[in-house]
Image (tube, rainbow, N blue to C red):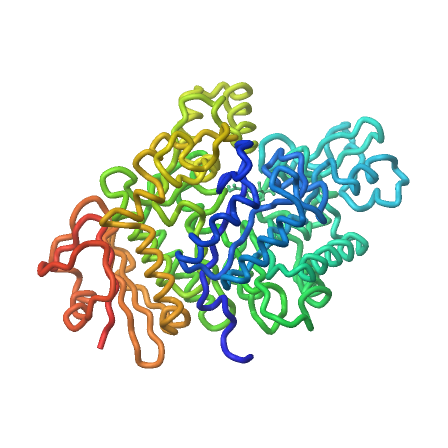
Length: 554
Ligand code: ISL
């Protein structure tokens, strides 16, 4: 084929199947529901769908706890439905990317049931089992990402098993080659079935620092689990699964705690590891002591961080671009103004993100400016991370329930997981049954139908951004240059390729930004031609609240 891979000019849309569209009325979204919305996604213009996990699961973590890698959970459909979804998506030119969750399985996976059955079971070593320490406690002091210790004692065999996430999510032992081969074989079967790639859940955690597992680890540290053998594992996986396969598959590794230096190694095409990664630096800047401790946005810090990733991966490697996913609060509530300037701030962040170099990811509902939700009672929440945090903070540490709930309102994962808002009807057109998580009450005003029939449509703005990327190599591949890094509300940068230059100028604030703009930007604007903006064009050089504009330079 030759040329840059499809994902350099492509855009990926993440579907969270539980919350997207419910065709059978049980209150939980399903594959038939997704099939019914393929036309909508084709109109948006996306190149691929990443499906959050649809495999059989006890659903303690909404499918990120898998008990069978080879099938579809009956709540979502079956393999026949899945094959139809792949075929119909391909028909429309949309690829299907599966979630690959292989740092851990469900504690109901047959592998773990066998492993746990006795000290001598052949699969005992497929997970991380350790004897109690000298004082009869857990082997080390690691905490789980979902509160509490990362080790749980199995009474029957007298040993602890490791789970970086929930008690029901035991970590697989990738030191064991049988585990690795079993995973590669499974991946090959999905590719043979026709899927187009994998988003790899916390894939850098599969390699543990073995000396820390067995040593006195001081405390939890997100980067601590990543062992240096991660590169060997990913190269081995590439050779066993992707090398020699026809077609361009997408591999994106979710990697909390990594730096740009790590990312260059992971995404250097010559090293054959993954195409791109999801890093976490830019979504950690507004977190204090823990993720529920929300700090105000420091715009210069965010700009500098995004620019740092653009620059450090400019020569070697490739970025993924995201502000939202199923684990993050809604961008318009977090970084914008989800009331008075909802349309303007949603489109501002869309422009700032989609005009960078990398592969943009859109999370369902982002394309219509869906917002965070504020349920009054913890009883309305479903997310295991949120519920564990609440229990620990309120019950064990005497936090005030309203204070803990405020953190959940700002940062909780259910903000992203309320059902997709299709229309203004009682369940937002998501389901005819009772939704598993309540719809956001604001769906009467914020929904696909209203957005698309309105004068100012977030959806149409995203359509335009996707089209621009498809049609302009400078959007896909151009060099990135940040302007005015320290400015507190101006967000401006250029992209250049082969003599062509684009300029983004945005005012990320409720207040207007009065002319004259800083000289570096004003000088470029003097000869620029407007390509796209989120306000009607004007004569004045003052930027209106959350105004975002894209120009072509001569
Ligand atoms: O939500 C988070 C951000 O603070 C993390 O705790 C998150 O759990 C982490 O980013 C890993 O996420 C992935 O693996 C988890 C799963 O719950 C998340 O939904 C998934 O995206 C365990 O499989």
